[in-house]
Image (tube, rainbow, N blue to C red; front, side):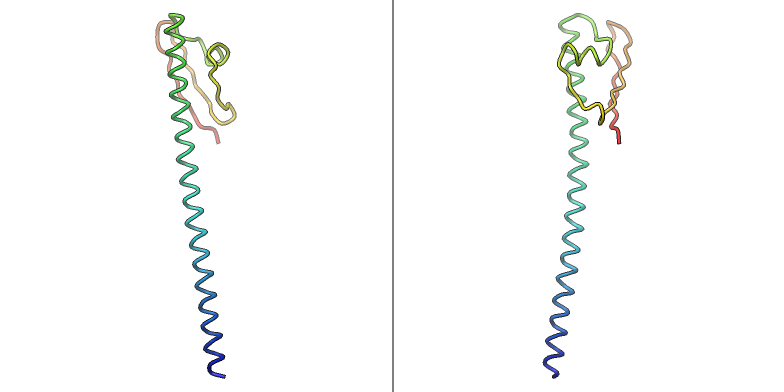
Length: 107
């Protein structure tokens, strides 16, 4: 009888350890997945910033003036981006002055 109680107690401890370990692994996995997602989002924003800068420079080099708006870059220079995910604030200053560009991530 005592051995049976000890065996059940041991099984209970093993089950408890397994549940705690599973919960810990799920927490670590969730935390790591969130960190990876945040890293990817910041990397995507940086890539878009480089693409916009490169396209603006290419337009100026070929045409001798800066583009009047982002729509011009998408229509004539093949710039593509997800407008549902990003807002590009493009402040045109003049044909010979580099525009002020701010990229904002939408929620």
